[in-house]
Amino acid sequence: MNATPPIPENAPRLDPEEILTGILEWVAIESPSNDGGAVSAMVDRVASDFYALGFPLQRESGRDGYGDILTARTPWGDDGPGILVLCHVDTVHPLGTLDGPLSPRREGDKVYGPGIYDMKGGAYLAFSALRHLVRLGERTPLPVTVMFVPEEEAGSPISREAIEQAARASKYVLVTEPARAGGKVVTARRGAARYTVRALGRAAHSGLRHQDGRSAIREMARQILRFEALTDYVADVTCNVGLVSGGTGSNVVPAECRAEVDVRLPNPEAAKRICADIAAFEPYDPEVTLEISGGLNRPPYEKDAGIARLFAHAHRLAQEIGFELEDMKTGGGSDGNFTAALGVPTLDGLGVDGDGAHQPDEHLYVSSLLPRTRLLLGLLRTLR
Image 1 (cartoon, rainbow, N blue to C red):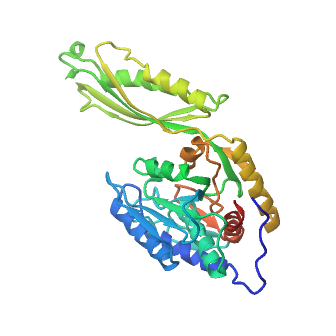
Image 2: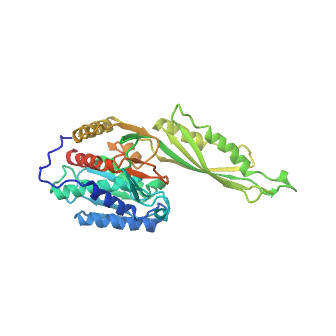
Image 3: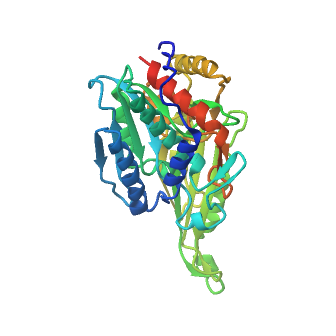
């Protein structure tokens, strides 16, 4: 990690309006995670932009209803360990959001649009930083690989293997998820476990033979309280039963009930203990079958010595640029959880600053575009 080399006075300058225009062009291509065709159309655009820079591309076809995985690599450098930049091109917003409350618009420093903050803005910053290096005629000390995954918002079920393989071949990982709380980067995240719970009882007429039934909903209600009781704010553990469905009619003892559960975990020890506890859950009613599938989806991401050194370097670069960079731990997961758990120094939250992720008022701050691009550019130019 070296000091930032000076850029000649007559060199091309970063233009925030050009960056914003490019972000809005990416935002205009709606790409909800569960629509593989729409996401792959977004990948088409990203591939076209990187092809214009002369970057070799690798594209892996999606599966299970998800879009394609795209990897772009700098045309310079050898095959040795380099920098992996992780981005995702899917959003949580359904098709048609562009024509609703999140139609792209600019109001002062805020620009609105679906996925503009999480995380097409940050993904485009990675492209902008590399485009600027090409314009400068400059090569980074380490080769750079940029991976665009199609289903991060769904937990990266098809891309995790590719992410981990690329991370193992890298010295550093930079994640362009959005900045947090006024521009902070992320150096730790809670882990996440996801479960599908099914209770299978026995149907009966609720008026004629209620006693013959075994209510799956009654069993699930008790299991929901058991899951929710795992929440411990002091220990930084939360459990949320977010979806519940079951039954066929008010006059039928319900034979089946289903629930979707999200558990957030602060460290590997807590993850191991709580996941083991859940695996041991038994039905309260011995005549009802309880099925629990799932488990740890994203391992906890802890700030180790390598991450601390990487953040310290980014902090110095930010000071050179003219702002004070802070870091934080956040509860949300990202693909950085996978790479940090492998022991690869990972710096997350390097994308745009803004607010309203996953909400109908999602927006970025135009004022963040230059400093955040310069920070990414500085990291690419100085990491060794």
